[in-house]
Length: 152
Image (cartoon, rainbow, N blue to C red; front, side, top):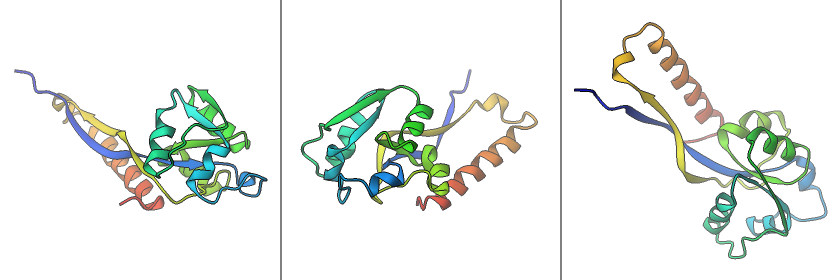
């Protein structure tokens, strides 16, 4: 008999728009989520994340004036930092850039996406040296992130 994997949800994926501070001072307003579609939106892999987020904010016209689709989240963050557009980032991806002031979240609104970061444990390795240390470190990192980003 082989035990199945134990999955523990560490943190759900929480998405929020992020952009360079310069966009807040730019010619196109960013007063409400409805203003987002007047900006260049940066998509990760596909357009459904943005569409879903905007709909959750009650924005009916979810097609942006212009957009780019990129597959690499590092590139997406770099584009946003450079002022090329607005990205929909998860809190983990954005935390350091927000703290450094390289990015801002114009709206203090986050919506969960049906995904998350899970701890996947095989029972057979539970007693191996280092496993407990790693797990303690990982849980502490997640706990710190939740505290810094005010995630309940």
